[in-house]
Length: 487
Image 1 (spheres, rainbow, N blue to C red):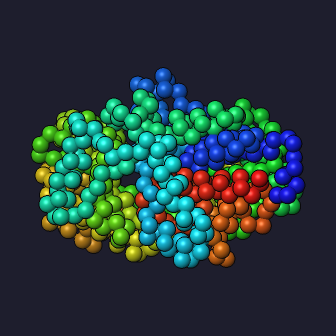
Image 2 (image 1 turned 90 degrees about the vertical axis):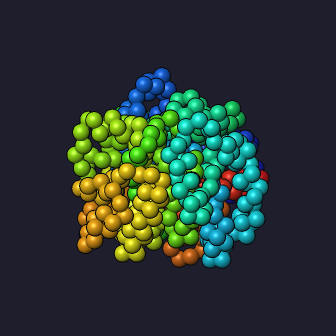
Image 3 (image 1 turned 30 degrees about the vertical axis):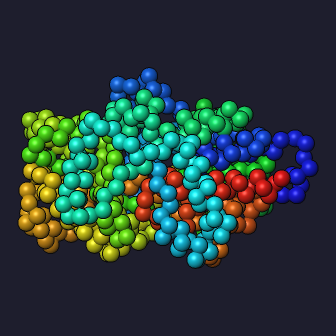
Protein backbone atom coordinates (compact mmCIF):
# COMPACT_ATOMS: atom_id res chain seq x y z
CA UNK A 1 0.00 0.00 0.00
CA UNK A 2 3.02 2.31 0.21
CA UNK A 3 2.47 3.66 -3.33
CA UNK A 4 -0.82 5.20 -2.19
CA UNK A 5 0.46 7.01 0.89
CA UNK A 6 1.90 10.05 -0.90
CA UNK A 7 -0.83 10.48 -3.49
CA UNK A 8 -2.37 13.95 -3.73
CA UNK A 9 -5.40 12.65 -5.66
CA UNK A 10 -8.15 10.95 -3.67
CA UNK A 11 -7.89 7.18 -3.61
CA UNK A 12 -10.78 5.71 -5.61
CA UNK A 13 -12.66 2.91 -3.90
CA UNK A 14 -15.50 0.87 -5.38
CA UNK A 15 -17.91 -0.76 -2.96
CA UNK A 16 -19.95 -3.53 -4.57
CA UNK A 17 -23.24 -3.95 -2.70
CA UNK A 18 -25.18 -1.71 -0.34
CA UNK A 19 -26.35 -4.06 2.41
CA UNK A 20 -25.15 -4.23 6.01
CA UNK A 21 -21.50 -4.70 4.98
CA UNK A 22 -21.28 -2.32 2.04
CA UNK A 23 -23.17 0.45 3.81
CA UNK A 24 -20.79 0.45 6.77
CA UNK A 25 -17.68 0.32 4.57
CA UNK A 26 -18.99 3.12 2.35
CA UNK A 27 -19.84 5.45 5.21
CA UNK A 28 -16.61 4.95 7.12
CA UNK A 29 -14.35 5.32 4.08
CA UNK A 30 -16.25 8.33 2.71
CA UNK A 31 -16.04 10.00 6.12
CA UNK A 32 -12.28 9.36 6.00
CA UNK A 33 -12.16 11.38 2.74
CA UNK A 34 -11.76 8.55 0.24
CA UNK A 35 -13.43 8.76 -3.17
CA UNK A 36 -16.14 6.15 -2.67
CA UNK A 37 -18.47 4.85 -5.39
CA UNK A 38 -21.25 2.46 -4.35
CA UNK A 39 -22.61 0.07 -6.98
CA UNK A 40 -25.88 -1.73 -6.27
CA UNK A 41 -27.48 -4.24 -8.63
CA UNK A 42 -31.01 -3.42 -7.49
CA UNK A 43 -32.96 -0.19 -7.49
CA UNK A 44 -33.79 2.18 -4.65
CA UNK A 45 -37.13 1.60 -2.94
CA UNK A 46 -40.03 3.52 -4.45
CA UNK A 47 -42.38 3.79 -1.47
CA UNK A 48 -45.18 5.44 -3.41
CA UNK A 49 -45.15 2.61 -5.93
CA UNK A 50 -45.32 -0.16 -3.34
CA UNK A 51 -47.48 1.46 -0.66
CA UNK A 52 -50.57 -0.55 -1.58
CA UNK A 53 -48.84 -3.76 -2.57
CA UNK A 54 -47.35 -6.62 -0.59
CA UNK A 55 -46.65 -8.70 -3.70
CA UNK A 56 -44.73 -6.27 -5.91
CA UNK A 57 -41.75 -5.94 -3.53
CA UNK A 58 -41.24 -9.70 -3.77
CA UNK A 59 -40.57 -9.48 -7.49
CA UNK A 60 -38.76 -6.14 -7.46
CA UNK A 61 -36.68 -6.10 -4.30
CA UNK A 62 -35.95 -9.81 -3.83
CA UNK A 63 -33.52 -11.66 -6.07
CA UNK A 64 -35.24 -14.18 -8.36
CA UNK A 65 -38.62 -12.94 -7.21
CA UNK A 66 -38.08 -14.17 -3.66
CA UNK A 67 -36.69 -17.69 -3.95
CA UNK A 68 -33.35 -19.01 -5.16
CA UNK A 69 -33.46 -22.83 -5.06
CA UNK A 70 -30.62 -24.29 -3.04
CA UNK A 71 -30.08 -27.82 -4.24
CA UNK A 72 -30.16 -30.07 -1.22
CA UNK A 73 -32.16 -32.97 0.12
CA UNK A 74 -34.72 -31.57 0.77
CA UNK A 75 -34.59 -28.50 -1.49
CA UNK A 76 -34.16 -25.17 0.35
CA UNK A 77 -35.79 -21.93 -0.76
CA UNK A 78 -33.34 -19.05 -0.19
CA UNK A 79 -34.42 -15.39 -0.14
CA UNK A 80 -32.15 -12.35 -0.36
CA UNK A 81 -32.60 -8.68 -1.11
CA UNK A 82 -31.65 -7.06 -4.42
CA UNK A 83 -32.31 -3.44 -3.56
CA UNK A 84 -30.49 -0.32 -2.39
CA UNK A 85 -29.94 -1.08 1.29
CA UNK A 86 -29.70 -4.80 0.66
CA UNK A 87 -31.55 -7.30 2.77
CA UNK A 88 -31.88 -4.72 5.55
CA UNK A 89 -34.78 -3.30 3.50
CA UNK A 90 -36.78 -6.53 3.69
CA UNK A 91 -35.77 -8.10 7.01
CA UNK A 92 -37.19 -7.74 10.51
CA UNK A 93 -34.61 -5.27 11.75
CA UNK A 94 -33.19 -7.67 14.34
CA UNK A 95 -29.83 -6.49 15.64
CA UNK A 96 -28.11 -9.07 17.82
CA UNK A 97 -24.59 -8.82 19.09
CA UNK A 98 -22.44 -11.76 18.02
CA UNK A 99 -22.96 -14.48 20.66
CA UNK A 100 -19.90 -14.46 22.93
CA UNK A 101 -19.53 -18.23 22.76
CA UNK A 102 -19.20 -17.94 18.97
CA UNK A 103 -16.75 -15.06 19.27
CA UNK A 104 -14.66 -17.02 21.78
CA UNK A 105 -14.49 -20.03 19.46
CA UNK A 106 -13.36 -17.82 16.57
CA UNK A 107 -10.63 -16.29 18.72
CA UNK A 108 -9.41 -19.68 19.93
CA UNK A 109 -9.07 -20.99 16.36
CA UNK A 110 -7.46 -17.69 15.25
CA UNK A 111 -10.25 -16.91 12.81
CA UNK A 112 -10.30 -13.38 14.21
CA UNK A 113 -7.52 -11.28 15.74
CA UNK A 114 -7.23 -10.30 19.40
CA UNK A 115 -7.65 -6.67 18.36
CA UNK A 116 -10.91 -7.50 16.61
CA UNK A 117 -12.11 -9.32 19.73
CA UNK A 118 -11.17 -6.40 21.98
CA UNK A 119 -13.16 -3.93 19.83
CA UNK A 120 -16.42 -5.84 20.42
CA UNK A 121 -18.14 -3.54 22.92
CA UNK A 122 -17.02 -0.29 21.34
CA UNK A 123 -18.08 -1.20 17.82
CA UNK A 124 -21.42 -2.68 18.82
CA UNK A 125 -22.24 0.30 21.02
CA UNK A 126 -21.61 2.54 18.01
CA UNK A 127 -23.83 0.41 15.75
CA UNK A 128 -26.65 0.25 18.28
CA UNK A 129 -26.57 4.01 18.78
CA UNK A 130 -26.66 4.78 15.06
CA UNK A 131 -29.54 2.37 14.43
CA UNK A 132 -31.48 3.34 17.58
CA UNK A 133 -31.59 -0.31 18.64
CA UNK A 134 -34.09 -0.91 21.42
CA UNK A 135 -36.29 -3.52 23.05
CA UNK A 136 -39.28 -1.27 23.61
CA UNK A 137 -42.07 -3.10 21.82
CA UNK A 138 -45.47 -1.71 20.82
CA UNK A 139 -48.05 -2.03 23.58
CA UNK A 140 -51.01 -2.69 21.28
CA UNK A 141 -51.24 -5.93 19.34
CA UNK A 142 -48.57 -8.64 19.05
CA UNK A 143 -50.82 -11.13 20.80
CA UNK A 144 -49.10 -13.97 18.92
CA UNK A 145 -45.77 -13.05 20.52
CA UNK A 146 -47.42 -12.54 23.91
CA UNK A 147 -49.05 -15.99 23.74
CA UNK A 148 -45.66 -17.49 22.87
CA UNK A 149 -44.11 -15.69 25.83
CA UNK A 150 -46.83 -16.84 28.25
CA UNK A 151 -46.51 -20.44 27.10
CA UNK A 152 -42.72 -20.39 27.49
CA UNK A 153 -43.09 -18.95 30.98
CA UNK A 154 -45.32 -21.87 31.96
CA UNK A 155 -42.48 -24.24 31.10
CA UNK A 156 -39.94 -21.90 32.68
CA UNK A 157 -38.21 -21.66 29.30
CA UNK A 158 -36.04 -18.68 28.41
CA UNK A 159 -37.75 -16.16 26.15
CA UNK A 160 -36.45 -12.65 25.59
CA UNK A 161 -37.46 -9.35 24.00
CA UNK A 162 -35.71 -8.86 20.69
CA UNK A 163 -33.37 -5.90 20.05
CA UNK A 164 -34.52 -4.24 16.84
CA UNK A 165 -33.42 -1.27 14.77
CA UNK A 166 -36.84 0.37 14.83
CA UNK A 167 -38.12 3.84 15.79
CA UNK A 168 -41.83 4.39 16.52
CA UNK A 169 -43.03 1.19 14.87
CA UNK A 170 -46.42 1.76 13.21
CA UNK A 171 -47.25 -1.96 13.17
CA UNK A 172 -47.97 -2.08 9.46
CA UNK A 173 -46.97 -5.74 9.64
CA UNK A 174 -44.97 -5.61 6.44
CA UNK A 175 -41.30 -5.64 7.49
CA UNK A 176 -40.61 -8.36 4.93
CA UNK A 177 -42.04 -6.27 2.08
CA UNK A 178 -40.37 -2.94 2.90
CA UNK A 179 -41.26 -0.66 5.81
CA UNK A 180 -42.99 2.25 4.09
CA UNK A 181 -43.27 4.43 7.22
CA UNK A 182 -39.53 4.75 7.79
CA UNK A 183 -39.64 3.13 11.22
CA UNK A 184 -37.15 0.36 10.48
CA UNK A 185 -33.65 1.79 10.47
CA UNK A 186 -32.38 0.12 7.33
CA UNK A 187 -29.05 0.91 5.71
CA UNK A 188 -30.73 3.26 3.21
CA UNK A 189 -31.93 5.45 6.09
CA UNK A 190 -28.71 5.34 8.14
CA UNK A 191 -25.22 4.36 7.01
CA UNK A 192 -25.85 4.89 3.30
CA UNK A 193 -27.26 8.32 4.03
CA UNK A 194 -24.11 9.03 6.06
CA UNK A 195 -21.98 7.86 3.15
CA UNK A 196 -23.75 10.13 0.65
CA UNK A 197 -23.56 13.08 3.05
CA UNK A 198 -19.79 12.48 3.21
CA UNK A 199 -19.50 12.55 -0.58
CA UNK A 200 -19.98 8.93 -1.66
CA UNK A 201 -21.63 8.49 -5.05
CA UNK A 202 -24.36 5.90 -5.56
CA UNK A 203 -25.09 3.94 -8.74
CA UNK A 204 -28.14 1.67 -8.64
CA UNK A 205 -29.32 -0.84 -11.26
CA UNK A 206 -25.64 -1.67 -11.83
CA UNK A 207 -24.73 -5.33 -12.08
CA UNK A 208 -21.08 -6.28 -11.58
CA UNK A 209 -20.20 -8.87 -14.19
CA UNK A 210 -16.60 -9.48 -13.14
CA UNK A 211 -13.40 -7.92 -11.84
CA UNK A 212 -10.80 -6.82 -14.38
CA UNK A 213 -7.62 -8.48 -13.21
CA UNK A 214 -3.93 -7.90 -13.97
CA UNK A 215 -2.16 -10.71 -12.14
CA UNK A 216 -2.89 -10.24 -8.44
CA UNK A 217 -4.21 -6.70 -8.87
CA UNK A 218 -7.77 -5.67 -9.63
CA UNK A 219 -7.65 -2.80 -12.12
CA UNK A 220 -11.39 -2.29 -12.38
CA UNK A 221 -14.77 -3.90 -12.84
CA UNK A 222 -17.00 -4.70 -15.80
CA UNK A 223 -20.50 -3.37 -15.10
CA UNK A 224 -23.81 -3.77 -16.88
CA UNK A 225 -26.05 -0.68 -16.62
CA UNK A 226 -29.11 0.08 -18.75
CA UNK A 227 -28.28 -2.87 -21.01
CA UNK A 228 -24.86 -1.33 -21.69
CA UNK A 229 -21.48 -2.65 -20.52
CA UNK A 230 -18.80 -0.32 -19.18
CA UNK A 231 -15.47 -0.61 -17.42
CA UNK A 232 -14.85 1.31 -14.20
CA UNK A 233 -11.28 1.64 -12.96
CA UNK A 234 -10.26 1.81 -9.31
CA UNK A 235 -7.55 1.72 -6.67
CA UNK A 236 -9.30 -0.63 -4.25
CA UNK A 237 -12.47 -2.72 -4.42
CA UNK A 238 -14.63 -3.90 -1.51
CA UNK A 239 -16.93 -6.78 -2.35
CA UNK A 240 -20.04 -6.56 -0.15
CA UNK A 241 -22.55 -8.38 -2.31
CA UNK A 242 -23.41 -11.05 0.26
CA UNK A 243 -22.54 -14.65 0.96
CA UNK A 244 -23.93 -15.83 -2.38
CA UNK A 245 -23.13 -13.02 -4.81
CA UNK A 246 -19.62 -12.13 -3.55
CA UNK A 247 -18.21 -15.61 -4.30
CA UNK A 248 -20.12 -15.61 -7.60
CA UNK A 249 -18.39 -12.38 -8.70
CA UNK A 250 -14.99 -13.68 -7.61
CA UNK A 251 -15.39 -17.02 -9.35
CA UNK A 252 -16.59 -15.34 -12.55
CA UNK A 253 -13.38 -13.30 -12.35
CA UNK A 254 -11.23 -16.43 -12.23
CA UNK A 255 -10.59 -16.22 -8.46
CA UNK A 256 -11.58 -19.58 -7.02
CA UNK A 257 -9.22 -20.67 -4.24
CA UNK A 258 -11.25 -21.07 -1.03
CA UNK A 259 -14.11 -19.15 -2.63
CA UNK A 260 -17.67 -20.39 -2.16
CA UNK A 261 -16.75 -23.68 -0.51
CA UNK A 262 -17.93 -23.26 3.09
CA UNK A 263 -21.41 -21.78 2.81
CA UNK A 264 -23.38 -21.86 6.07
CA UNK A 265 -27.14 -21.36 6.33
CA UNK A 266 -29.79 -20.98 8.98
CA UNK A 267 -32.80 -23.13 8.10
CA UNK A 268 -36.34 -21.95 8.83
CA UNK A 269 -39.44 -24.02 9.55
CA UNK A 270 -42.73 -22.16 9.14
CA UNK A 271 -45.89 -22.98 11.10
CA UNK A 272 -49.41 -21.66 10.61
CA UNK A 273 -51.21 -21.94 13.95
CA UNK A 274 -54.95 -21.47 14.38
CA UNK A 275 -56.04 -20.69 17.93
CA UNK A 276 -59.38 -21.09 19.70
CA UNK A 277 -59.49 -17.38 20.51
CA UNK A 278 -58.97 -14.30 18.36
CA UNK A 279 -55.32 -13.37 17.91
CA UNK A 280 -55.56 -10.73 15.17
CA UNK A 281 -51.91 -11.28 14.32
CA UNK A 282 -52.06 -8.70 11.53
CA UNK A 283 -52.27 -6.08 14.28
CA UNK A 284 -48.67 -6.35 15.32
CA UNK A 285 -45.15 -6.55 14.03
CA UNK A 286 -42.40 -9.07 13.50
CA UNK A 287 -40.16 -10.93 15.97
CA UNK A 288 -40.85 -9.01 19.19
CA UNK A 289 -39.93 -12.03 21.34
CA UNK A 290 -37.60 -14.97 20.78
CA UNK A 291 -37.53 -18.35 22.50
CA UNK A 292 -33.90 -19.01 23.43
CA UNK A 293 -34.23 -21.97 25.78
CA UNK A 294 -32.69 -24.26 23.16
CA UNK A 295 -30.28 -21.79 21.57
CA UNK A 296 -27.21 -23.84 22.50
CA UNK A 297 -28.71 -26.75 20.58
CA UNK A 298 -29.32 -24.46 17.61
CA UNK A 299 -33.08 -23.84 17.90
CA UNK A 300 -34.88 -20.47 18.07
CA UNK A 301 -38.60 -19.69 17.74
CA UNK A 302 -40.44 -16.43 16.95
CA UNK A 303 -43.74 -15.08 15.64
CA UNK A 304 -43.45 -13.54 12.18
CA UNK A 305 -45.39 -11.11 9.95
CA UNK A 306 -48.97 -12.16 9.27
CA UNK A 307 -50.91 -11.12 6.17
CA UNK A 308 -53.44 -13.09 4.15
CA UNK A 309 -51.05 -13.39 1.19
CA UNK A 310 -48.47 -15.07 3.42
CA UNK A 311 -51.12 -17.39 4.86
CA UNK A 312 -51.83 -18.65 1.35
CA UNK A 313 -48.13 -19.27 0.72
CA UNK A 314 -47.77 -21.06 4.04
CA UNK A 315 -50.44 -23.67 3.31
CA UNK A 316 -50.75 -23.87 -0.47
CA UNK A 317 -48.59 -27.00 -0.79
CA UNK A 318 -49.98 -28.77 2.25
CA UNK A 319 -53.74 -29.12 2.42
CA UNK A 320 -56.74 -27.71 0.55
CA UNK A 321 -58.72 -25.12 2.52
CA UNK A 322 -61.97 -23.30 1.94
CA UNK A 323 -62.36 -19.54 1.57
CA UNK A 324 -64.23 -19.58 4.88
CA UNK A 325 -61.22 -21.12 6.58
CA UNK A 326 -58.94 -18.48 5.07
CA UNK A 327 -61.16 -15.76 6.52
CA UNK A 328 -61.04 -17.52 9.88
CA UNK A 329 -57.24 -17.45 9.76
CA UNK A 330 -57.33 -13.66 9.66
CA UNK A 331 -58.72 -13.51 13.20
CA UNK A 332 -57.48 -16.66 14.84
CA UNK A 333 -54.33 -17.52 12.87
CA UNK A 334 -50.66 -16.65 13.36
CA UNK A 335 -47.42 -17.52 11.59
CA UNK A 336 -44.35 -18.68 13.51
CA UNK A 337 -40.81 -19.49 12.41
CA UNK A 338 -38.46 -21.94 14.07
CA UNK A 339 -34.86 -21.36 13.03
CA UNK A 340 -32.21 -24.05 13.32
CA UNK A 341 -28.43 -23.85 13.07
CA UNK A 342 -27.40 -26.87 10.97
CA UNK A 343 -23.92 -28.37 10.78
CA UNK A 344 -23.91 -28.97 7.03
CA UNK A 345 -22.11 -26.74 4.54
CA UNK A 346 -22.78 -25.73 0.97
CA UNK A 347 -21.03 -24.59 -2.20
CA UNK A 348 -21.63 -21.53 -4.38
CA UNK A 349 -20.82 -21.80 -8.06
CA UNK A 350 -21.26 -19.72 -11.21
CA UNK A 351 -22.61 -21.56 -14.24
CA UNK A 352 -21.98 -19.82 -17.51
CA UNK A 353 -21.70 -16.05 -17.54
CA UNK A 354 -24.45 -15.14 -15.06
CA UNK A 355 -26.20 -18.19 -13.60
CA UNK A 356 -25.96 -18.98 -9.88
CA UNK A 357 -25.84 -22.58 -8.65
CA UNK A 358 -25.91 -23.32 -4.91
CA UNK A 359 -25.75 -26.75 -3.28
CA UNK A 360 -25.98 -27.66 0.39
CA UNK A 361 -25.31 -30.87 2.28
CA UNK A 362 -27.98 -31.38 4.94
CA UNK A 363 -26.64 -33.87 7.46
CA UNK A 364 -28.73 -36.50 9.22
CA UNK A 365 -28.13 -34.64 12.49
CA UNK A 366 -29.61 -31.52 10.86
CA UNK A 367 -32.79 -33.42 10.04
CA UNK A 368 -32.89 -34.63 13.64
CA UNK A 369 -32.53 -31.04 14.82
CA UNK A 370 -35.42 -29.97 12.59
CA UNK A 371 -37.53 -32.78 14.03
CA UNK A 372 -36.73 -31.60 17.56
CA UNK A 373 -37.62 -28.03 16.62
CA UNK A 374 -41.01 -29.19 15.30
CA UNK A 375 -41.77 -31.04 18.54
CA UNK A 376 -40.72 -28.12 20.76
CA UNK A 377 -42.69 -25.63 18.69
CA UNK A 378 -45.89 -27.67 18.65
CA UNK A 379 -45.65 -28.28 22.39
CA UNK A 380 -45.56 -24.52 22.93
CA UNK A 381 -48.37 -23.83 20.48
CA UNK A 382 -50.77 -26.34 22.00
CA UNK A 383 -49.91 -25.04 25.46
CA UNK A 384 -50.85 -21.56 24.15
CA UNK A 385 -54.33 -22.73 23.18
CA UNK A 386 -53.76 -23.80 19.59
CA UNK A 387 -56.74 -25.45 17.95
CA UNK A 388 -54.73 -26.91 15.09
CA UNK A 389 -51.35 -26.46 13.40
CA UNK A 390 -50.17 -26.62 9.80
CA UNK A 391 -46.72 -28.17 9.87
CA UNK A 392 -43.72 -27.34 7.63
CA UNK A 393 -44.28 -30.67 5.92
CA UNK A 394 -45.51 -30.94 2.35
CA UNK A 395 -48.91 -32.63 2.03
CA UNK A 396 -49.51 -33.01 5.76
CA UNK A 397 -52.95 -32.39 7.24
CA UNK A 398 -53.33 -29.96 10.14
CA UNK A 399 -52.72 -31.62 13.50
CA UNK A 400 -54.87 -31.14 16.60
CA UNK A 401 -52.66 -32.69 19.28
CA UNK A 402 -49.17 -33.93 20.09
CA UNK A 403 -50.49 -37.46 19.55
CA UNK A 404 -51.43 -36.55 15.99
CA UNK A 405 -47.99 -34.98 15.54
CA UNK A 406 -46.37 -38.28 16.53
CA UNK A 407 -48.59 -40.12 14.06
CA UNK A 408 -47.64 -37.73 11.24
CA UNK A 409 -43.93 -37.94 11.97
CA UNK A 410 -43.88 -41.73 12.40
CA UNK A 411 -42.14 -43.35 9.45
CA UNK A 412 -42.19 -40.06 7.54
CA UNK A 413 -39.32 -39.45 5.12
CA UNK A 414 -38.50 -35.89 6.14
CA UNK A 415 -35.92 -35.58 3.39
CA UNK A 416 -38.77 -35.80 0.90
CA UNK A 417 -41.44 -33.88 2.76
CA UNK A 418 -39.77 -31.24 4.95
CA UNK A 419 -40.27 -27.65 3.75
CA UNK A 420 -37.20 -25.53 4.46
CA UNK A 421 -36.55 -21.84 3.89
CA UNK A 422 -33.42 -19.78 4.46
CA UNK A 423 -32.79 -16.04 4.68
CA UNK A 424 -29.39 -16.05 6.39
CA UNK A 425 -26.28 -17.16 4.50
CA UNK A 426 -22.68 -16.72 5.65
CA UNK A 427 -19.10 -18.05 5.74
CA UNK A 428 -18.67 -18.70 2.00
CA UNK A 429 -15.30 -16.83 1.98
CA UNK A 430 -14.29 -17.15 5.64
CA UNK A 431 -11.80 -15.03 7.55
CA UNK A 432 -8.85 -16.60 9.36
CA UNK A 433 -5.51 -18.34 9.14
CA UNK A 434 -6.76 -21.83 8.33
CA UNK A 435 -5.81 -23.40 5.02
CA UNK A 436 -9.39 -23.08 3.77
CA UNK A 437 -9.91 -19.43 4.76
CA UNK A 438 -10.26 -16.79 2.03
CA UNK A 439 -9.45 -13.46 3.71
CA UNK A 440 -6.98 -12.35 6.36
CA UNK A 441 -7.82 -10.70 9.67
CA UNK A 442 -8.29 -7.34 7.93
CA UNK A 443 -10.70 -8.58 5.26
CA UNK A 444 -8.10 -8.59 2.48
CA UNK A 445 -8.42 -11.41 -0.03
CA UNK A 446 -5.40 -13.65 0.38
CA UNK A 447 -2.96 -13.54 -2.49
CA UNK A 448 -4.35 -10.32 -3.97
CA UNK A 449 -3.21 -6.72 -3.67
CA UNK A 450 -6.30 -4.57 -3.48
CA UNK A 451 -9.39 -6.75 -3.08
CA UNK A 452 -11.29 -6.69 0.23
CA UNK A 453 -14.43 -8.47 1.37
CA UNK A 454 -16.87 -7.02 3.89
CA UNK A 455 -20.17 -8.88 4.17
CA UNK A 456 -21.63 -12.14 5.49
CA UNK A 457 -19.24 -14.18 3.36
CA UNK A 458 -16.28 -13.44 5.69
CA UNK A 459 -17.92 -14.76 8.85
CA UNK A 460 -15.80 -17.75 9.92
CA UNK A 461 -18.75 -20.06 10.64
CA UNK A 462 -22.47 -20.31 11.36
CA UNK A 463 -23.46 -17.98 14.21
CA UNK A 464 -27.02 -19.17 14.92
CA UNK A 465 -28.53 -15.67 15.22
CA UNK A 466 -29.54 -13.07 12.66
CA UNK A 467 -26.16 -12.02 11.24
CA UNK A 468 -26.79 -8.34 10.45
CA UNK A 469 -25.12 -7.03 13.61
CA UNK A 470 -22.15 -9.35 13.15
CA UNK A 471 -21.73 -8.31 9.50
CA UNK A 472 -21.69 -4.66 10.57
CA UNK A 473 -19.21 -5.44 13.36
CA UNK A 474 -16.82 -7.08 10.89
CA UNK A 475 -17.23 -4.25 8.40
CA UNK A 476 -16.56 -1.55 11.00
CA UNK A 477 -13.32 -3.28 11.95
CA UNK A 478 -12.25 -3.91 8.34
CA UNK A 479 -12.81 -0.23 7.52
CA UNK A 480 -10.90 0.83 10.64
CA UNK A 481 -7.83 -1.28 9.78
CA UNK A 482 -7.90 -0.24 6.13
CA UNK A 483 -7.85 3.45 7.08
CA UNK A 484 -5.09 2.94 9.66
CA UNK A 485 -2.90 1.05 7.21
CA UNK A 486 -3.25 3.70 4.50
CA UNK A 487 -2.60 6.72 6.69
